[in-house]
Amino acid sequence: MQLECKPDLDRSLERFEAWWDGQIIDRPPVTIYTPSGRDVKTPDKTHATLRDRWLDVEYNVAAFEASIAGELFLGDTFPMFFPNVGPEVCATLFGCELEFGETTSWSQPVAASCREILKIQPNFENVYWHTLGELTDLSLQRGAGKWLTGIPDLHMDGDLLAALRDPQEVCLEFYDDIDAIRAACEYTNTFYATIYDELYNRITATGQPCTTWATYLHSGRAYVTSCDLICMISPEMLERTIMPSIREQMGWLDRNMFHLDGPGALKHLDTMLACKDLDALQWVYGDGNEPAAKWAEVYQKAQSAGKSIQIYAVDINDAKALAEHIKPEGAWFQVGGSHTRAETEDFLRWAERWAAGKKV
Image 1 (tube, rainbow, N blue to C red):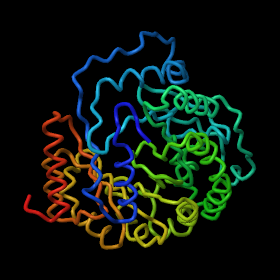
Image 2: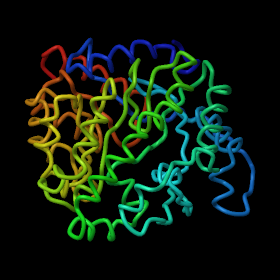
Image 3: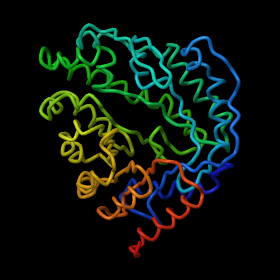
Image 4: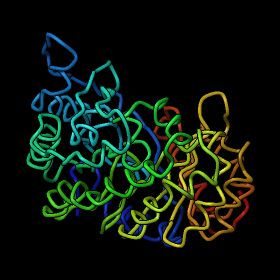
């Protein structure tokens, strides 16, 4: 598959397929931002409210299309439209409304307890889910041969309960009725395949590979399994409540990467790495905890467990510093910052030398 501004997309797909398997072709995948220097003409439209802007399908696709001119898609970076109404869209299936900010949205809780969640049937006819479908369809239509369309952010398991209940209330329920947490995770997880495939099937029917906000590529069902709520609970509570649902998601997907978010979640690292169906780890150390090289032991532990790693490097120097402590096989560099074409191409050559075991 070729894109107008990414004619070597198939080669990037090969690199990512090797990455999922902990292998390497010529070098690790590299995602890096390289501005083109060309002007970007954003659609000139005023919205009465933030909600109107978020739900304006035509505007959001057009704005993305215009943005492509501002970037060079070098390395394994590719243009991807991300259908998005915020991370808690799955909660709208179970009755929540969304409030919108400039860069994200959040749910208005509707459930008085986790046991109440067991009585709610998902409604796929709500305006937010319809908007995701319309964003996906229009992107696929307009983007044919120009860009890829991603799977939206679909927070499930413990994060879904937090959206339906309120995070503080869910934390209290871990003590008041822990069995209800497990029951609610199990119940909502029965809809996971339906929720995912509703959008995945539309996308892959066009022949494009699978991707999402974490810009990997895969020819089958791939996704980021996650639960940010786990930083608030112990490994014992995790195992008793949320973990069975996460393992079930991992087993259903062809490939998956777990999103481990922040130092408070590191107490669960061993649990995640022990999952036989986990393919890769996305370690997000968070603002104030950089650089990536500071966390070399986390990446080493993941690779020793046979898992691939996505590395959020602060910049090129951080990526090179971490490379001294990890192996190229199963490594993927997502390099922060903005880089000239010369800087990007120099780093890609460095990555090839590093992968080949040559002096870098």
